[in-house]
Image (cartoon, rainbow over all chains, first blue to last red; front, side, top):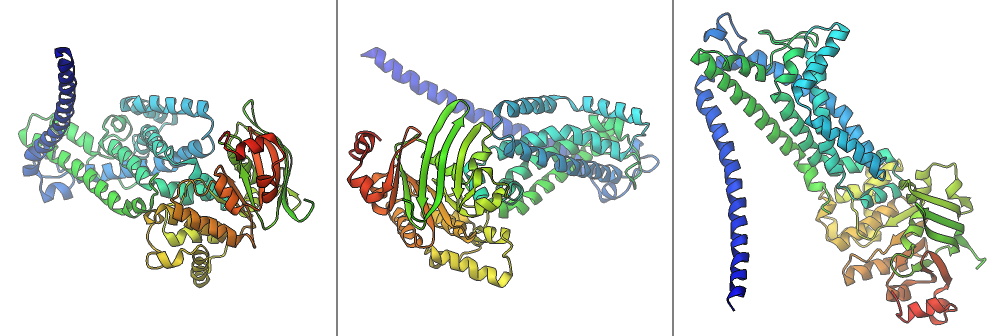
Length: 291
Length: 253
């Protein structure tokens, strides 16, 4: 009878092994996240001050003297909100078009998805270089607008695919039911399908917002860096990732620590935007139909 | 048969890709009666129903030939706006698909699209349609809550109310009770019996007993063809075709 016994034990061991594996992996991820946050806050919080959040860099800022990073904070918000907005007005129609008009064109749809995934994988420095070459062709200088356009180019694939994944889950029956009430395609798309998908659409927007505000490579050539707060789309602008980059490469400890403080600010902005949008989409989530 | 008919399908052929799904369908559907389209799964009942309000337009691989006359108008070749044609028909799907909004707005959605959105009247109208499906008393305290919070039987009645709200002449029902419990199914069937004095109702079903309970007129389909159609009593008690007889005896499903 002993072979049978061994088999049972093997099954059990397998079960236990994979359970431990999944548990450990989850713990590892949470641990890394906590360490990251701890590291940033531990080094950054002491240097974080009201002055830092409200003033622009003064003369000796990059040598550890007075001043702040408000130029980078405002610049980053301008850049990412502008880019997300621009990307949204392009991505939502594309995602809807794919899932309403092309819904049954499986081959075409899969080709489009394939190319979007490719675009998603292209590093942002390549978009930065592309944006730069366009700027040269048109004779533009580094500006907020160039940065917004470049960032929106590289978040558009992320946003479309994010929305596409949610819109894909809407059953055809819901669409058919809406049409049979005499709705036009547009009525159904914006009155019903988008409403149903708002939580997922917001997640897609957040995902691309996180990418937009955190990216340094795309803005390096296109937006430049300045100590002033831009007051027009055609001026260069600072951004938090570049501010972190410039400060952390300094040998002066005060400046290095300010880089971490800037990272704290960046993290908090993402956190606040996430919480706010979750809160405001709660109502729609309640209404979405579960299938 | 030449009496007052509402819908007349002539020489309808439907292909999905190269597959011949509906073959030479010729049938008339009488006004203000319950017509049951009966047949085993996969015989094209649902497809026939969907071609009646041109939901088949959604599928580019579907090709439809022939004519469907509703009130004398050929809807397959009509220049009229498709939404106008669809408004004539309410659809009840296999499972309820409530809209992702409140109970009130589910019914108001169709009213608003019809331009009938005067606020004080809207409330009256929504109440009226909810009463018609005996749902109002159950939901009157939570009209603002999501339609999602209703039970599945209530959702199906909500969908019926929503369909009635666009003021159709025809109700298309695609196995409307297949997802419901017996009591909710009974409620829907009963509603159909009451509604048939004002509406032409077409019900697709593969449940023979349901057909026996509600049908005035039966269309029996098998493998994309109409085998037999006629008044319910004739078809059920005295089928002329061998296949109908076999189906009624439960030889195949």
